Structure formats: C-alpha cells, structure tokens
Length: 535
Image (cartoon, rainbow, N blue to C red):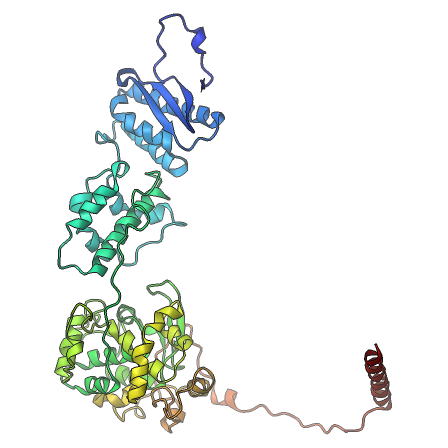
C-alpha cells in the first residue's frame, strides 16, 4: 500500500520522467510505515517511521522529511546529511527539534558532523555529568550531587565505549568493556560501573530519545555479593577510641557523633552550623543521599559535648573539620579510621582483615555500630530509621543477629560523649547555652517505655536516658547559642511566669429546667432499652 503527500501522482508524470529530488512516498511494510525519498546524488533512500501509526501520520512525517531534504539539497550537504534525516524520521518532540537545529547549522556551514552523524557514548555521558541534560529536561533528570563519582567509574570503560555511536551501541560493546575491568575491583565496584553504563543508555532512550530502546537487556547489571560480614565496634572499644588523647580531638568528636547518631560519614562531613539547633537539641538534614529530608532530636550527651567543643573550637563553614581547617573525610576516611583504632590500642583481628567472607572495618561501619548497639538496647526500627534514613525494615533486619549477640553478652550502651572524651569531661556547666528543653529530655526518657523498652534486666545507658542534672536546669549564659536561622528566641522570664487566673465559685445546684431535662432523657433512654429487649 503506497500513498503520496499533496504532490503530483505518479500517473501524472510522463513516461520515463524521474521523481523530483526531495519528493517521495510512504508505504506500510508489515506493521511499520516507511518513507522513500529521492535525494539527488545520495540516491533514493528508505527511512523507517517507527512513531507513525496511521497513514495520515506517515504523510505528515514525509512532509517534514521532504522539507529538510530540500534544504540539505539546496546547501549541497545531502550526502553527509542523510544520517540526520534518519534521526528526523524516528524522533519526535524535543529530539526532533534538536535534529532541525543540527540541520540548520549544517546548511549554514556552522557545523560539519562526522560521517556517522550520531552522538557517541562519551559525548552523551558528558552531557549527563555536566548537568546539561538536567537543564534540558528538569522534570525527568535530576542534577548529579557528586558527578566526580560517576566520572571515576566511567573512566574504566570510556576507552572502549567512548567512541561508539549510541545508535550503533550493542550489548556486545558493554560486555567487552566490563570483561576488561581491572581484576582487583570488587563485585560491588563492577556492579556500580555497570549501573552507570545502564543509566547513561536509559537517559539516551528517554528523555533524550537518541535511541529507540536500551540495548542492554533486563538483568544485564551483575548482582553484587552483599553477604560478606561487616565489622562494628563494641561499646568498650568506643570508650577506648574516645579516650585516646593521641588522636586529634576533631577526629574523635567526629567519630563519636557518627557512632551515636548513625549518620552517613559524608552527610556529617557536609553539616553546617545552621543545620544544628543546640538550644533545643535538634538537627535538620535536608540534603542527603536519598533526597528524603529528615530531622530528629540529638542524644542529650551529644548536645552537651558539641556545646563544649564549639566553645573550645568555634565552627566555621563546616561543623566537623580537620585541625588544618579542611573538611573531615567522608568516603575516603577508612584508612585513617583504622589507623586511629590501632592508635587507641584496639586490635581485634576481625576489624582489620578482609577475606572472602568478611570486610575490614570502614568509616561507613559507624552506622552499623550505631544500629547494632541501639537494637541491642531496645530501640525500635522506627527510632533508628529516623536517624539513619533507611527506607525499609529489611535494611535494618540484617543487623539483628549481631544485636542479639551484643544483648546476650550484656555489653551495654555507649558512654555519654561528653564524659567519654577527657578534654570535654566536667566542662558542661561552664559552657554557655540554653538548657535542653524538658520536652526533649522527657521524650528521650519516655521513648524507652512507649517505643520499645530495653529487655528485662537490661537498662539503657545514660546516653539515651539521661538523668536530669543541675547543669541542665541552669539559666542560659551570655552569648549567642548555636542554632539555625529559623530558631525562635527563648521566651523571656516574664513570659514563662504562669498567667493569673481568677477563681470563680460555681454552685453545684442545677436549675430546675436542667433537672427536668435529665429526667425526661432518662425515661426516653429506658423506653428504648425495653423496646430493644422485646424486639
């Protein structure tokens, strides 16, 4: 079945007359419409129209192709412009607009595409990493928060995949790139590289619409072996780490915060002073890995420790920083963390060995330490996920076996941070700052009763259920308290005084009308009960 757009029908041509350059017809082949055009020195070409479902749509697309082909013929660029016509036949919307712009530049002499006319894998990956694709499609593509991590993974495969045009990309290209990865890479690293390749091709499919389908089949991304045992610290080892004065104080307060609050190391490394409200003992974390803003009440001992620490070392751009002023490491702090553990005299072999079934301890395992010890001391999954940001119960379930061991051994909970660090011990009363509100401390103490109390015979440590001290009820000292911009000032002494209420004597004698109404109501109720009994 063939049809032509509003052009002279073939029967109107004289015998032997050739079809004019730029003209053509459409034809249904199987279930796909195609367009055949005469392109001068490029000959007659057939273009697939995968987005057309009816003859009317095919005729409309033929008019677009004829118009673009006419411009390329007039500019003398038809030979190298054929690949652009192929893309124009298969694209719609914004993608078709991009092809029109490319043809405009080619006809004006402003650009001269390669012979294939296709975007390569490396070129499109750069659009993704640079944020250009997110600017072009803000509703479908989010800007990368850490593009350098993606760039590091792609560097392993760009030598093989970089020059491959996306329209010619096959699963064989991806298989070859993954097969020549360095042998020392772990299974999780190989999986991460494969995920980035798959993501780049998925974005090229939609919303960029450079290719019709992702050439990587479902299940191509390899499974990572997540069954390796992960290490965590015991409460007594945490106390030894906090007491090691040979380790810089800035590192110990950082480690202690991670172990007691369960944050990711890179999240804590990016904390700014405005994210903390030490007047009320709260933290707000709007930007994080999962894009799920969360806020929670800090442990009272952590609040007291931070107040003393900030009085000694005022925070600048970041809450936690090295003695040199640079931000503390996030993902790259594993080696330094292990060195500090050895410096503290912690030499448990399983913390420092990597085998086929176990990983050595990493800075990220401070989260595992937090979850394990808090589960062992009766904290609920909800309480834990508020701090860690875990999305499902299954993610926390992996730590329950280790938590049962800690509970059975009776290892207890973490020591209060302001008492575990020698430089901060006993200095809480001398540091200015408003006391923790009664509601925050009462909530911390009452949560054990209502949200999952400790098992029988096991009492939560003072880090979670602190006893009220005289320092906690002292008035605020002079000086501005550290807190976010949205924090409201504490009420004045006059505002805290109870309001005087006038006492009015009310007689217990009810009016006669009220007594009659109650007697009448009783008789009606009694009649209803009798009727229900007999019915």
